[in-house]
Length: 90
Ligand code: FES
Image (cartoon, rainbow, N blue to C red; front, side):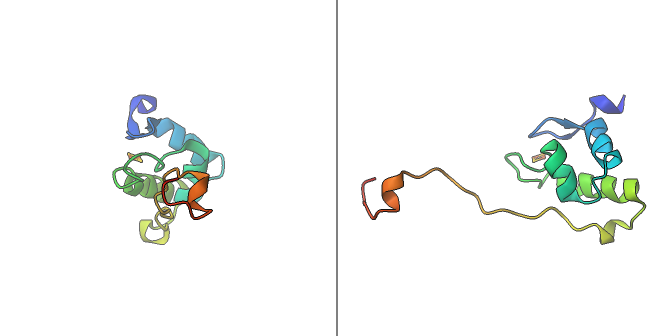
């Protein structure tokens, strides 16, 4: 049943995949993120981050307040190489 429950809708990561990641040694949200790609979707974990945080806390026996949220990354977009050389219309 839990393998059908999506925790991260953006990356289509199921509850079971997250439980497997925790069983595999992921003790932080970032550890789950690296193993499953949860929290790496379009919403950047705004929807699933707290759920993953709670699952990590439950799976590791920690208080949820002691499990830090995932690290945020700056949004990136592709740029043409000429931009670095100073071309305005690159
Ligand atoms: S629901 Fe997980 S990144 Fe959006």
